[in-house]
Picture 1 (cartoon, one colour):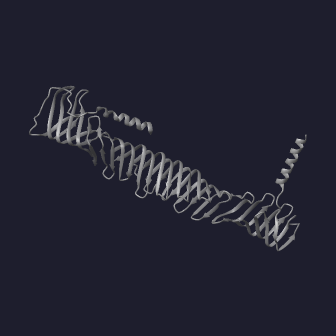
Picture 2: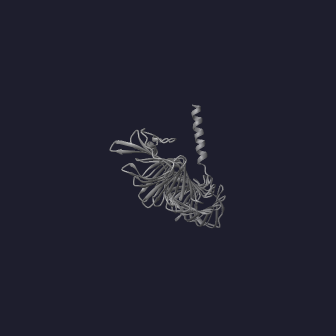
Length: 491
């Protein structure tokens, strides 16, 4: 019983403590009067009015004070000052019980070097929290913010902009449904659907943050942006740094140029605006569209600029006429030439070619490949017989999906099978300095050759012969299956 009475007394004392309010203190009033007919219970105040409650000071030219309600209705040139915080308006209704100030008409709030202008503000002098529900504008050094409504928390140096929120400075413009602004560290955080302009790049995302102090923006979730050159980037995480003049993409992305002739997919991207160079890694896929031909490159790492790209250490190449692999690749956009080095090999349904270096070039509808050093061509007659050509250099000219002409130069060695229907007639071995051949209906046909004077034409009887020191590596022909299986699995 005693314990219950003690709890009731404790609860009563706590309620009394919190129900007590600090009365408004009259510091100065020039004239006072009473008009119970118009303002019952109020004192009419005029001239140099100054009230105080705690660290909050209220100033006005005229007003009405309700002692029983601990309330002040101020009009005229109204000012509310609390330490470094200053508010001015045309009318103020202040309750000493709740310590809530309602400011209306031409409201302007200033603190240090930041200013808020709006028409109506509610402000608590005890918690130092305020809100506005009319369109407002915030001006700070080098930055401007607008919104339909908002909240500000003085102790946390935080402003929350809600409804058509927009923040701008010299290089950044952000429009969002809501934006949080930390004034002390000059950092923005935006939520939901956001439109942005970053130093000439525009786009949208679904959230992120921006540090004005570090001049860095991080955009998150469904980022879609277009730069001044018309290139379009789609990703989930985008980091832009003004100081470093760089951009970084983390996670899956796609980058397309303005003409959609070039597109890059990958899982990490970094770009530098100073020289417009890029670095791409982790399952990189590149597509180039040139006239009617489309080239795909699947690689580990890609670097370069819009005029030339380099890829390594493993490259898989595919276009309308052939497939290829190599350890190092360079693509020159000016003439659409592709340089393949480090054990390059190309093939299609009719042949397989390997060399130390290769260059694929295009001119109009004409397409050809130049091979250098230890060139080797392999074409299957059946499961047991292959036509073979070995030379120092080689030039293959293509039409759609098929080789049209081949020119071999320097220490040429060949094995060639004559085939009638499905029957192999004979095997011919040629050693020469220069040889010209064509593919017709998927088969090699020699046109002419310049034979070395010390070497004679041979027709050995043994079938399925291979040129000395040459490994056809027929399994490379099936790299196409691996190539597209890997791409489909990732993309």
